Amino acid sequence: MSVAFSHWRCGRDYQIVDAGRLEDVTLFVSGNSRAIRVSRDLGERLRAGLEAMNAIEAAEWNLLADNGIVSEANIPVVREARISDGANLAINVNLTSVCNLGCTYCFADGGDYGRISGKLEGDIADDIFRFVQDRLHGEESVRFEFFGGEPLLNFERISAMCARAEAVSNETGIKFIHRISTNLTVLPEGALELFARHGFIVSVSIDGCRETHDRNRPTKGGRGSWDRIIANCRAVRAAGDDITLVARMTVMGGDPGMKENVRALWDMNLFDYFQIYPGVVPRSIGQALDAKNGNFGQGTMAADFLDQLAEFVDGYSDLFNPDNRFRGVLEYERIADMVLRGKAALSFCSGGRNYFTFSPDHSIMPCHRLVGDTALQSGDSRTGIDATTLHDWRMPIDDHPVCSGCWIRYICGGGCKQENLQATGSLNSPSAEGCRHQIQLVENVVGMLAAQDDSYRMRDRSQLDDLFVSCGRPVMLNFRNDAESPPLQHFQPL
Ligand code: SF4
Ligand code: SF4
Image 1 (cartoon, rainbow, N blue to C red):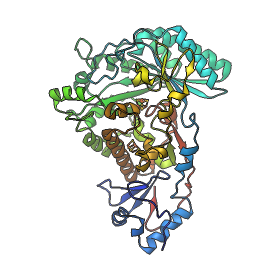
Image 2: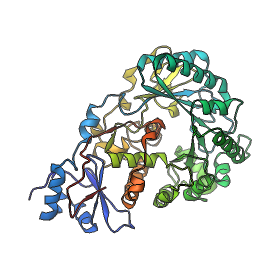
Image 3: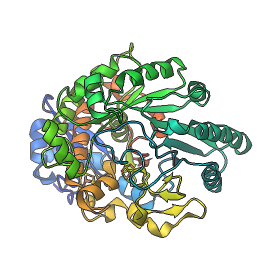
Image 4: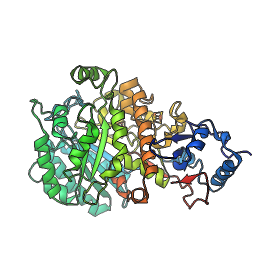
């Protein structure tokens, strides 16, 4: 019997994900982001190819294809998307070069990226509002990402921009979402009221328990910062439930591990969401860190990070508890949302598409981590974007020589370009370590989804679009058929 999609190959068009502790395995369909439970025996044969199915299995497979339950719905979605599709416009407002911490893994060279100095003044704020109002109409949304250095060291500008955003919103209907990435070692007078009034998303850089955090994120004078930050987190939490508090963790490996560090923060019941990233550093910093703690080897991320990730995702669902305000790890929930609802990533992030960083020197950059790298500048706040600089940021995934052959391409979208640049010297040459991380992340989350029941799978994930998940990864529904599958013996779509 001929099988539908006979050209598909395991590892490119689908993958068999084995969560280990389950009786079954999961068939992940790249073409429409669908997860389907199959027996271990069928999964093993599918690793060799679709032609390894027996006649009954092939008949069921063809039925799934006829009903659009397995399909290639992602291809036209990604190919035909506009640059502005899939994510809100986002402006990173780089408020100041000054930072009061001396983090071991800092990519900004102590706040100023080694090249930029000074505070963001009113003339750049004028440029930002002009940029926004030229692009948006009616009730469209823009998210301001207040950033630095430490952005609260330029609190007057934040406050002034929020007041102006409110006036512009009243006048035009444009919706402004305010998010701040802060170390929260300082809390200027008026900040709590501002956060509450505008329903801020407050993303706090905190790496876990006191021991881990103070090792990674000391003050410039070498003292710990954890106690002060936690006291300020408590104050923010008490300022109102409309504030979304996010713990933004960087994992540098070693002990205590990621699981213990998340638990330490979770136990405080302060944070709505977590974001968990590996610390990615140039090899020279990795080697220096290795001399201290032995975690890095020759890599750009901690050697034990992936093991810690797998262990953490395995116990992830235990963190959802009615007595705790925890609503998820943003990146995991985004992947779960794409798999369960049928969505495709248009790119890894919105950088250079619908997300730009404005800095005190008037530069517009496609990525906040590349501030100061004039070779990659995408414009000037006085004159706007030069679209000719953005080709590398807008390559469709199916045109990419490497990513087009990767089974997670419509979930990953092509990797972090800044990490690619750091690892390979090219924005679009994937970092091997970055790929291993992204692939394992998808495997771990798909395996976890297969093990969960509807109480987890049906959670409301509508807030994700406002939360700057994976630097605003643009995602779109692929409109696959999500109707109930016909009753089948060998395939159980999630
Ligand atoms: S960056 Fe790596 S993991 Fe992501 S789609 Fe490309 S090859 Fe796959
Ligand atoms: S995902 Fe990477 S390239 Fe994209 S904006 Fe974030 S740091 Fe920059």
